[in-house]
Length: 134
Image (cartoon, rainbow, N blue to C red; front, side):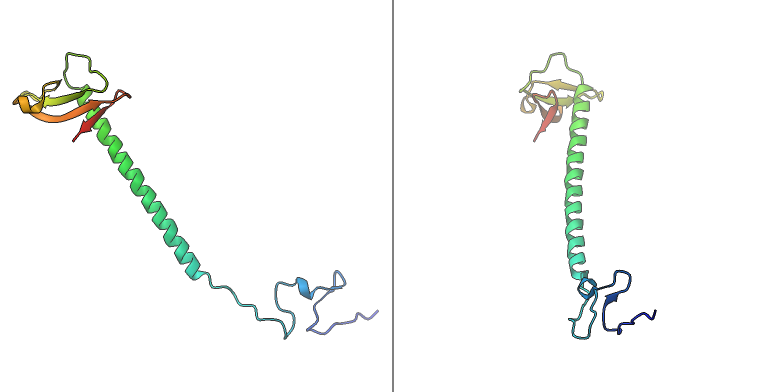
């Protein structure tokens, strides 16, 4: 039996034996609207810039927090390696000095009232860590 060949401009699915022009992802007739590809370059560039800015900001925050944590670690290590003959009280301010021998020591004596080599003032917080006071 001779198969009826449809004209080229007719969208007929031979396998399903149906007209499926409405289901095609492309234009099937000369009167159909022109399909143009959407230019996404501008959107991609804006998105890339936003993501890069977000990641750079987050990196800066993490780096700053890391540097603050390292400084806190070094202060605590310096104080805990220093010499003191009393038990520090939470909430009190103490002063760190250095002797001529290079040994550091913690004291209650204010820097204005003595002539020791002053390294800094520190506050013992509730978490038992030392915070430097400016």
